[in-house]
Length: 108
Image (cartoon, rainbow, N blue to C red):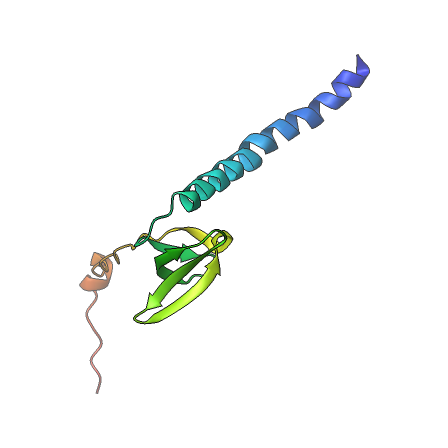
């Protein structure tokens, strides 16, 4: 009985670690592999190095990306991070009211 009580906290920590770290990581990896397996010509992808390109040709272990007009590179499929989703830049916020109420200093 003492053995079970001493092992219980370690098992509990392992379970928490599994659900917080390991399980989400394996789900994300399986989703990425599924994306790579269903890749089609014309899709825009981002590589783990940050390069963004359009898929031109798919080969068994590699793909050919067009990263600029007439610039093509051959990369391993494992380097694909996922689909490239372009985000719109957020408009800048106007100055807060506290800054607007202060008079601007005049230069002499």
